[in-house]
Image (cartoon, rainbow, N blue to C red; front, side):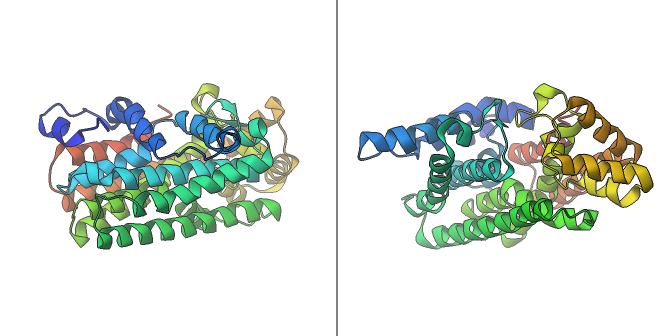
Amino acid sequence: MNIDLNELLDAGEEPKSFEEYLDRYAERVGDVINAYIPRGSHPDMDTYLYTPLLEYSRNGGKRHRPLICLAACLAVGGDAFKAISAAAAIEHFHTAALIHDDIADGAELRRGEPCLHLREGLGLAINMGDLGLQLVNGTVAKDPNLDDSTKLRVLNELIDMTRRTIEGQALDIGWARDGRYDIAPEDYLVMATCKTAHYSGAVPLAIGAIIGGGTETQIEGLRNYGLDTGLAFQIQDDLLNLVGKTESTKKGFRDDITEGKRTLVVVHALQNLEGADRDRLVELLSSHTKDPAELDEAVSIMEKAGSIDYARSYAENLTSIAKNRLYDMIDPSPAREILVSMADWFVNRLK
């Protein structure tokens, strides 16, 4: 598979930052992940299922989830090669979640291209997302490099990750469906932790540490680090969608407003605004507007409430505390420094 992270890091040639780590390995790790997507027993299966999913997965972004799984394995002294199937499984889950999420939201863009359900049709896109979910457990279960007890523990992690993500998605969709504007920041944190932090941070790190033979203290320490930084990652994504440059979010700039998303910025603003400003923000969030002037107006109202600064500070505080705890739990190594750098990358993508 032509990925020898152990040799690279041990040789002192390690990347100097998390961003450099992603840039160096994202494409090669992506090739490995895509190798787990099979081909069909009939040519039309490739036409309607495997080939479109493969093309979608090839436009896979930074691949931070599988790469932090590998880094966690290295950080506890393990062999990153043994964690490749689990890293691929997590990325296939991410692919499936994005496909289904875009359908649920009625989204139009993903990674700068039309969403899969717009290109291939709703039914085929749902089916491709289902295949992505099937690849999650199957990829690990068939790995000859993992012993049965490790497989079972990793599979239980993936099953729990899937349930938690679905729980968070239920809150996110349900609040929008029912026009809920009584959501508090504490409610958002529960939703975002379930929907994003477990699969974007906590579980990849915990699984990497499990496969690497880490102690229970190391496994849980990395899991908690992933919960905090994964939550910060989601908050920063919310901010990018509102106040980043248009090109900084390939999902669709400010479509969180169009979709009426209850982000931390939104729920903080609704809790702190009164009178006409609050009423207007609710009106804009309920209207599904795509008018740039109205989207600008919604952002201005949230800025007036101090909500953008609040969300940014919350994410930065999360990562600062998390980094200090990680230093106490994981021995010094190049892999640990990569993971520490990850926290800064998660919250500095606006800067």
